[in-house]
Amino acid sequence: MGTDNQTWAKEFILLGLSSDWDTQVPLFVLFSITYLVTVLGNFLIVLLIRLDSRLHTPMYFFLTNLSVVDVSYATSIVPQMLVHLLAEHKVIPYVSCASQLFFSLALGGIEFVLLAVMAYDRYVAVCDPLRYLVIMHGGLCARLAITSWVSGSINSLVHTTITFQLPMCTNKFIDHISCEILAVVRLACVDTSSSEATIMVSSIVLLMTPFCLVLLSYIRIISTIVKIQSTEGRKKAFHTCASHLTVVVLCYGMAIFTYIQPRSGPSVLEEKLISLFYAILTPMLNPMIYSLRNKEVKGAWQKLLGKLSGLTSKLAT
Image (cartoon, rainbow, N blue to C red; front, side):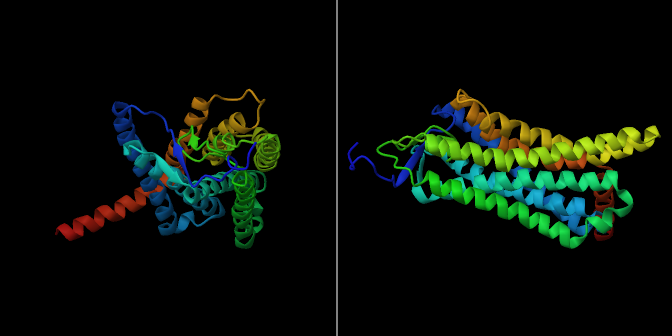
């Protein structure tokens, strides 16, 4: 192939979900509302944890990190997607595409590692409750959180560098809602088997390793819960893990389906829907799951609302 065709594109065109205007406008309204709910829900969770001293525990420290990751992940994809839903020319510059790929991959990786860290936290809480605060001290929590952020960022930097060193030739149409790694790799006019192998290996390391740690933690947790004599004790132990387990199933399930599978994997449409799930639904559902299924969070909400109600009454008088 001639060197004239092997160029690095200055910009890309995202094909998105639909080119039909009558479809794009309702999608814009729907995704805008969902994004606002996501930002507001996660912001309120972080604010609530900061304001209520009863929530100054390792579990809620990690939940704060998870909320920050969720909002950041949604922000790395959704605003640009909203602009493109109303734009006639759905162009994204090369640098913006590379940045979006880096941040979405990094934040996704951070979330997977963070969920494994939270599983360990729940393991200690259920299996060794008397020493929970001794084991999960502030220094360890900080190191675990930093490990999550650093490992996800390094993995993303490697992938982004490899991906954008591939010559894209004259093809600049990305059949996706964002600069997703598999969609960008498809544009290359060279053999991408080594790049795909790198993606697979990295997915196994950064996805399956935390997943195995989560699985191991819950095997130990379940074995401990089964040994509890009282029904009330078992229910209480289970409820301490229910919210986290729900989020784990949602996040890891889709990721494993997308990245760790035979070459005849999901179709392009399925990849787009999965990306929408991660960018819109998961960040919105996470704070709801933790709010609705957690007695401590619900109690903190009631306390905060009571204070606000009292303050409003005083101002009114």
